[in-house]
Length: 539
Image (cartoon, rainbow, N blue to C red; front, top):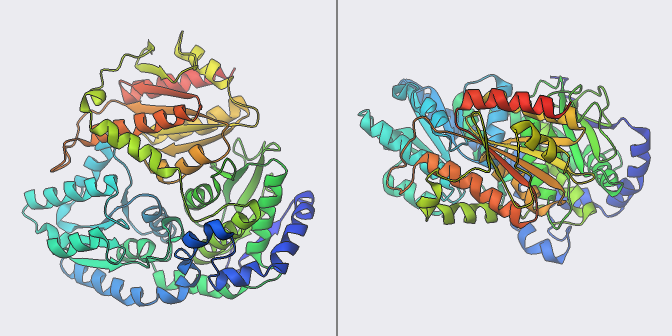
């Protein structure tokens, strides 16, 4: 890592000048100290009810301490039984933070935040005799996580393993999932603080239990957060959270709707993916907000060549085109970015704790699951080019070769808009799909995000529907070679994945956004054809 010092540097002098009045405003309003004191009035009367039950994250560095011993005791028990492989079933805030913690600590954690049958099958193919699955959900009703729980419970039983002894639950007190866990006799139930929303839950049981069972040093993580907590709650122009929030808000006022995130040697693995959900779900609503764009590095397209609609932020030391630099160890960074995002919400004028548009895609997917004939895979494509079938929402040109379709789609993006690549595939076996982000950004000069479906639905999905309405959406779906049934449910994982893609595309189209869906009838061949077409379309 870059060291233990936590700070924010406004590298760009012009941006620092524009942020200065907003820094003064936050200091004068005593916003930081009020936030640390969990004052729910900071975001206005309309947000007060929600904020009043969503602010316990400001003191998790203290309240989560008892988890250290509980987690270590369970880990010791499991290891004594030869169980040392940890699988996490969770979505959004339940998976992103523990994945970053485990990767940064260099410990093995298999994360399931997918409905791709192939990726789930790969997780099942691991040594079940050595496996414990942590199922994380505030309510237990998250369809992806519930599906994983059912699939693994059956797999354990089929293998002659007591499933209940291999399932650990993380949920809210009094939730239906807590009741189910007690009824089924699951190994252990960790109850998280119910007054913390998912994207602010990194230092709750949702973040700490799976990472800690995998071997991460969660005591050190809490120590890092504790070391910076007092500073973040101080009403001072030197408060890094105030500086970061003011810079984001000042840039947004000037038309910079996107925040481009690149790691510059921080030593933290995958941090932009965690920050992506925090910023997008917290700010992307009421037709405004900040769209986080996680890129491959400071030389990546979108960062190195950022235009006036985007602010490049380095996670680590200043490098390249960075206008802002944020440094510090992981525990401190979690708390810093949470404080900054909440304060930015006050400046932008939104409630950073609700997510009013997330449910729409879920409802659309559920409706499709109720009509399985719509998921038969027999839709008629507008065009077929090799191993790629082309589908488009109303107004999207779909005639000609794939390269022609892409060229037209790239040319139709709104001024100051963005492309979102959404891949409903296996993020391990189909990992090369993520290269499309840079290829499209380089050839179009347009800010481009990349998300694995349905993972992104619990992250940037809120911004897509609730933020600035200037996105164009490229969905990529693929044939399912070997599907997996979901026990006691009338659908397979393949059908669920398909319903999630179609449902989200339907909601985006209803918002008047262009959606182009490319279905790969052969994933490997189709992806190769798609990459070539993207390269040709941008020439």
